[in-house]
Structures are given as C-alpha cells and as structure tokens.
Amino acid sequence: MSERQKIDARGAFCPGPLMELIAALKLAQVGEEIEVLSSDKGSAADIPAWVAKVGHVHVGTTEQDGCWTIIVRKAK
Amino acid sequence: MAGLPLYILLASGEHEKIQLAAMIASVGAVSDRPVEVFVSMDALPAFRRDIEPAERYHGGPLHETFMTSKVPDAMELFSNGRMLGDLKMWACALILDLHHWEVEKDLVEGLFDGPAGLTVFLASAEGGQLITI
Image (tube, rainbow over all chains, first blue to last red; front, side, top):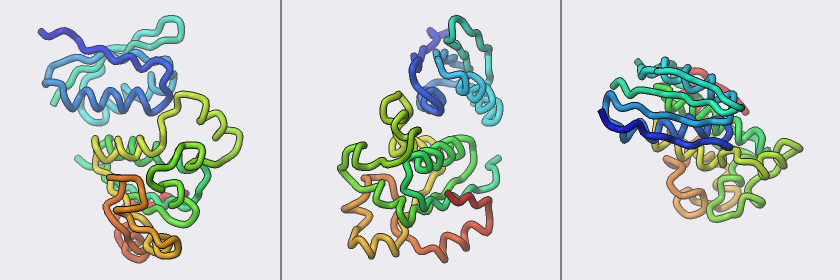
C-alpha cells in the first residue's frame, strides 16, 4: 500500500480544507488514503459529510489541541 | 446521481455576499450538483480583471476580518468550483453593456462561460433551485 498523502490545511477556513482534499482526490488512485490536518471546526464536520455524499470512505477523525486529522479513502 | 441543479443570482457587490455565493457555488459544484451563477448589478465590478483584493472587495466588519485572515479568496473559490466540479458562470449582458466591458477582456480570466441575459438564466432556473444574493 502506498504511503498516505498528507494535506496540511491548518489555518485555512471553510471551504479551503475541503477544496484541497478534493483536488488531491482527483489525482489519487482508487484505494489511496489522504490525511487532512485542519484547525477549522466546520471543515471537521463538513469533510465527512461531503465524503459520504459523493461516495468515498471516511476512515476516521481525531482531534488534538484544536487540530483535526481527517482520513479519507478514495473509493471510485 | 447528480442532485437538483442550483442557480445563483448574484447581485450584491458586498464582499460578504460574494463570499457566500462563492462558497455555495464551489461546494455545490463539487458535491455532484450542477451549479450556474448569474453575476449582475453591483456584483459584476468585483469580477474585473487584474485588480487588487483591496479594490475588488468592499463590505462591513466581516469583510475586514476576511481581508486579514486565511479565508479563501472568492474568485479562487469560483475557479475551484469550475475546475473540480460542474460550475458555469454567466455575466449579465446589461451590466457589461453599461460599463462597455467584454467578458474575454475585462473580467477575471477563465471564470465566465460568456455573457447572458436574465431571461435565458431564469428560464434555465425553472429546472432547479434558485438562490438570489
């Protein structure tokens, strides 16, 4: 399995982290995972909702000191 | 499956409202929803080519906060929506005429599909959800 791609979107506001994720997903292979770091609380909720809507996989979200790590797997 | 098409009629030149339109348009377009934006009235001057953000955006207290924080630029959000999703943008033919502007020469490069009239836009919008800002 290839190394998980990381996007550091800390400091960016909604919908910046989501847009960065979508741009990365366009280039990723199916099955590849992408990790988004975000300090934006709205994006921590919006990204899993978007992932569910368009049919990718939300692997999980963790939060530490106001920074969310959201992991997404490209499914199609 | 694509959702119900979203039509946004953007008439305000306030930064806050342009930002909201850009957020709705870009997120809608990347969420499997066709989006069309019709830019008219005081909103169109904000889409002029080659101007600095300080000249492009005007607004209230939130505008000041936008300008000093890492809020995505509205023009970039529209551009993202076009690049990553199904987003079409139209410049109001009336406002273009009044300013003697042309889409290809005077508006932000690559952002618009062309000039359009309100009648055509409203007819298209009958097939979807219309939001006026």
